[in-house]
Image (tube, rainbow, N blue to C red; front, side):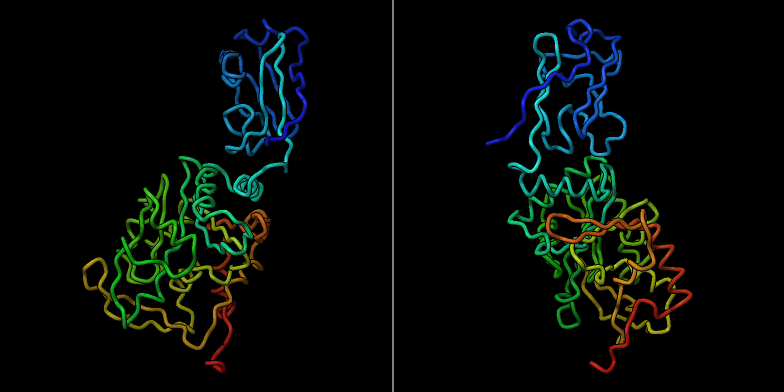
Length: 342
């Protein structure tokens, strides 16, 4: 059962039927953690629980155009009675679902409506009983219609020299539950590369995925990874998995550090056509991409929690600049010699 607080009169006027309903009367409603303003000229329809004409107030990064809501989570009820606007706030932390908490955590970490976010994820790290569909729903709801959600759909384990066939509509990702689930959702577009494709949904999905097939390398200039900095995108890591930052292979492709040997790939069948690529072979060296945390400072990297998982939100443009400079000055900055172990 939903738990709520007591009804309180939030209107600054004692007898305010006329004031509330007048089109030229500015009214500001402030609930703890929320601030909404009724702008003159918008009007207010009491038949709709006082929502019409109100907009999120200043200083509320998680605001939602519907009064009493934040990021799709109902935080307050409203009514007009006896000439006053009354509010009753939901008690936070009571009966809040994991999905609601996850959305709240995303906003607190710095994910905003309209953002373009590429997600590396460990579903296990979240420590939730939510289905993967619910977690993806939550991310899409926070990003909104103007945002774009991306996930790597890597297939390097199941598309190989021995099994060289890649079907962008059917080949399953090999890297986790969320990417495998995301691939099959309506409206998702997938870039074309036999081992390093990316799935995307949202406003910029087609623009980010359509050109990947032009590249001869896995993380080339037209890949969604390398387009993120161009369009002001972000990287989100759910769990302590920054060593899996595929974006960094794009930096290696640009700089060609001495440990990288470029060799011809096997001939793949990609969506029915024979195709050969240039492979970046770093045999004998292990990636240490988690070290990117050491070259970034806030606000370019933001640390927090998403449910039980440690989480990191990184500005892709800042990472591109910092990693390029670091690898150019110290080519071995993000790798370790593992030749003794192989």
